[in-house]
Length: 361
Length: 86
Image (cartoon, chains in turn yellow, brown):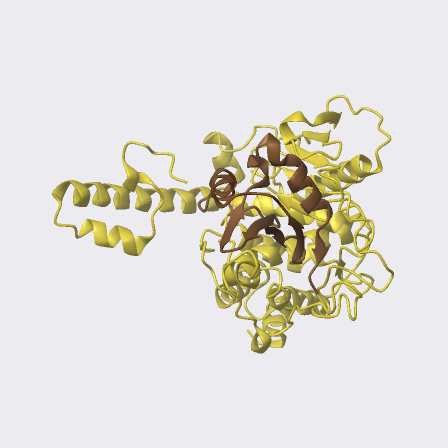
């Protein structure tokens, strides 16, 4: 929502709209639109400069903490006591006091939150969700039997599950990493949460979620089963998603039927952009970029976070990744970034191309 | 009249619904829907759940955090009764 109450065109508006306003017969509106366009141009260039700046330049400009590499995790965990009032939740644990706790859900999110923070900090020098040391807030035991976990724009919230189909949504590190990555995404490209951009948003969360789990468990691409939420879903045959074989995470489930995820672009599902349509299938079509990542990572071998993960993180933080990006845009950006990191004719570039080819993007 | 609460969305998109009989006039129902209507411009919560209330000819996306005290028990029952739509 626009917070500028004085001049509505100072809000972020799409370029086509701005172009129309600049051509307006009303001089005042046209002038403001030209000013806005000028500011946008400067802002874009600033963003590119800051993105490409060296650590020394960033430090001099005060963009990062002077104590690079010494940032400390700041995290708080709250118990909602099965209510829906986040403001009334009780502080269970904080990183300053490191209290001893008995809540399993609390222990799970501390472990998952630390693993996620370490992942971003140690591999990419990222200082928390916003890269400015944001305090991570996690809320457990939200609502009675809520079978879900979400990122609400400021914090991560987890339900205990219904006890029949799902158990606590804190049970898998990949889910905690998934939700935290939604926060990272909101601070980077902030991909729209609908249609292909939304499916990419979901895919980035799954990709970083699985890598956080793999790193925590020291699993290479062959050792990992590439399942998201394998503990959350009750029953040994079930998981929430499979990145290795989208569409097979659960089959003939008594309540849920079959996993609807496609693995390839020819099976892309055109769904309505409504909540009932999963905002154009954001959790469904994410199977396609997930599969591309899996194939690329598998072909590269070793630890996914050391190779494919670096490429995908470079894309996640690439100023060229636009809010309404499509699968083909991310395909191109992963190839360009792989070429930058590993060289044009490298096996890594070949593996990335193979990944997208297998996913038929 | 019958009211039906439908829940959609989530980490994996699952639709759940629950129905119950209520003793509300049309006027009371319209007033309730006005109060609890979901703001269409609200920030889209990643992996969030969304609710819709259907009652006769009326249907509206609703925000359960806005439910007035006198209707809390009704919505609590509906939420507890939610079943997966296969």
